Amino acid sequence: MLSHDRAGHMGVEKTKDRILQHFYWPNMFQDVMRYCRSCEICQKMDKSGKKRKYPLLPMRIIGVLFKRIGIDIVGPLIRSRKKKMHLPTICDFPTTYPEAIPLANIRTNTVVDALIHVFARIVLPQEMLHDQRTNFMSKVMKLFCQKLGISQSATSARHQQTNVFTERFHGTLKNMLRSLSDEQMKHWDEYIPYFLFSYREVPCQTTGY
Image 1 (cartoon, rainbow, N blue to C red):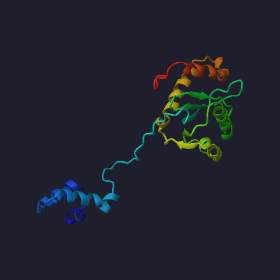
Image 2 (cartoon, rainbow, N blue to C red):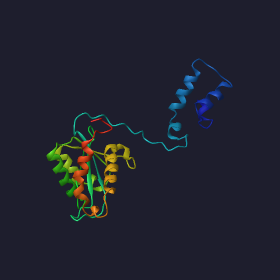
Image 3 (cartoon, rainbow, N blue to C red):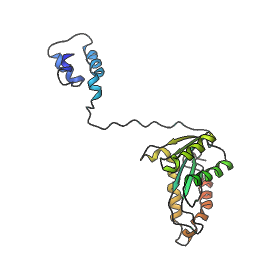
Image 4 (cartoon, rainbow, N blue to C red):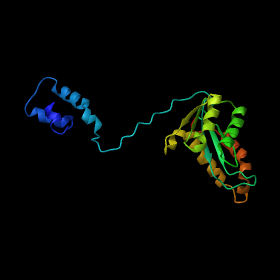
């Protein structure tokens, strides 16, 4: 269509206005719209001037306990007397039930051992959501998940909302740690079981249980 191709590949409305100065035919508006939207050159150009982002998709609702968990790591914290500096956390999506395991380091093998202790006590999850830090994306972690039949999912960069339950638990846990005195912080890892009990004991605002 010359009024579009030879006129700078303008949009649908401007192309219609240009044609209406000289011509009209039945279903003209639909024909113009169809032609402009199918134009190969126009599809390759970004006329909006805005950076387009792929839309984020909502995660499906999980109703089975411990089917999907979120994991993350708080720290590094002050080195405790037992030489603990990091606090990997696990949060069950359907129930928001939390776990936290004080560790001296966050090497992949250390994190995997901590996960095994939790899974052996509760149940193996089917899905595990985490960020893109190295120890979660390593070959050792991928092999660990593959052997146990766990599907890994990584959150989008700088989009913490994906792992929302774990992030909320982090905020609560950090506030609990801030309540400790300087002397208590020297053995903060000994307070974690009590903090977890306090968190689990009261109803969750999200689920009501």
